[in-house]
Amino acid sequence: MLDAIVIGTGPNGLVAAATLARHGWKVLALEARERPGGAVYSEAFTLPHYLHDVGAAFFPFADDSPAFRSLELIGAGLQWRNARRESCHPAPDGSCVSISRDIDLSAASFGADGDAWRRLAQWRQRMGERLPAALLSPLPALKAAIRLGPVHLTRLGLAGMTTTAGFSRRLFQSEAARRVIPGLALHVDLGPNDFAGTGLGLVLALLAASPGFRVPVGGARAITEAILLRFRESGGELRLNTHVDEVLVRRQRAVAVRTSTGEEFPVRHAILCNVGAPALFLRLLKARHVNHWLRASMRRFRYGWGTFKMDWALAGPVPWNAAEAWESAVIHAGDSVQDLVAFTEQVRGGHLPANPYLVIGQQSLVDPSRAPPGGQTLWAYSRVPNTLSDGWKGQREAFADRIEERIEGLAPGFRRLIRGRAIFAPPDLEAMNENLVGGDLGGGSAQWSQQLFLRPAFPYFNYRTPVKGLYLASASAHPGAGVHGACGFNAARRALADAPA
Ligand SMILES: Cc1cc2nc3c(=O)[nH]c(=O)nc-3n(C[C@H](O)[C@H](O)[C@H](O)COP(=O)(O)OP(=O)(O)OC[C@H]3O[C@@H](n4cnc5c(N)ncnc54)[C@H](O)[C@@H]3O)c2cc1C
Image (cartoon, rainbow, N blue to C red):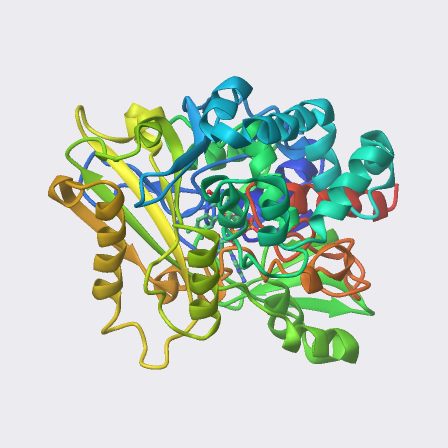
């Protein structure tokens, strides 16, 4: 009999499966789609020989994640690369600031704010690997917090409670430097004036300084393949094209799963779910197994904004006006804090943004294997409402054109280089991966009301559920979005600790 079943094979599901299998458990991973990896995979969907990441593309946790480190992914063939600059923030007025791992290079780019940046980067250095450990540990994370120390903890905590606009105004003098942290916080649904928005923007800025926004050689799917190798070499089994419709419960214990074809898989110890929290508690479990409080919380559960993602096959490098952008892994297009405030208001108001804020990735700059000789790939996303009142049909191409116009404004001549493009509006993303509800890339909103002890709902922050032997192991659990595998790793360790010796 199987010891454990893992439902879903995104990075969290695969890490959970590999961790359990390496412990000696007999594990079956079931994946709804025709391929593993969830939002961490790569395909040539524009032109042949141009390899694009379907979702995640930059990995600020990379091998600093305790989960990835425990699986020794470097030994499994994973290779990380960094660009000379990690995160570049140009604007049409010609101003530009960029973060590099080299403190002097960053300080020079920050100009009058160079010393302020230097102090932040040196703080990052002092925290070392204690920072990712504290961010990714299961709550209450006492050991990790003690290791980090009260000074760093208090400083992070106090900064985290502020708005990114306020924090940046106090820290920096120039508009160019002031738009960096608010721009980074907009990777998720945290606008410049949102209470406690700074936590994530600041952490991303610190991680850009070290270890940087890393890129795996061979595409994001190299991460999935490395974890899968670890899973399989420990005897784990993967079944694709297998959608789990129900978790079967007997005497308040998870005992089996039933697939959409009616097949049942019984299990001895644990079922780990790499699915969204509402999907688990409102769909996969019969209502009688979930208490009223949790069902009500799941009906109130908030998803993050939608994501509108594009990929391009280009005939050459993007001709950025800003010299620093030519050597940056990631470019952030946001003109000013005010521009980011307007963007936030439009998306929250249910409108397509007039001047879309963009996260833009130049993977092939760092990993030339992604494009044919002379060619380049480009990846970008903006945040949009989850749904549009008139639907996406008439808006998809027009909004894609608006995004290209935005890049053209920063890099005149960009459009002439386009040889192919692919567009993924929120419904396309959700059709690809049902965890991306309404195009939300984070498994649920990153607002404070759904973080830490409140993720996905109090008191179920520690991966356990009201059903014995059933665990939540997706980005809907702490610490949430991002490719670090921590949700799956922590859930697997919880399952191992709960199992009879
Ligand atoms: C466009 C985009 C860009 C992103 N950029 C970055 C980035 O640059 N860096 C970063 O760190 N993060 C990024 N992210 C976020 C990151 O990809 C996610 O946070 C991460 O993939 C979440 O991992 P997961 O394992 O929880 O779930 P997912 O990766 O969403 O995988 C879930 C898997 O479970 C399967 N599944 C769901 N329900 C069932 C079921 N009932 N039965 C069987 N299988 C099921 C799905 O098919 C899917 O394969 C991005 C995401 C997107 C969409």
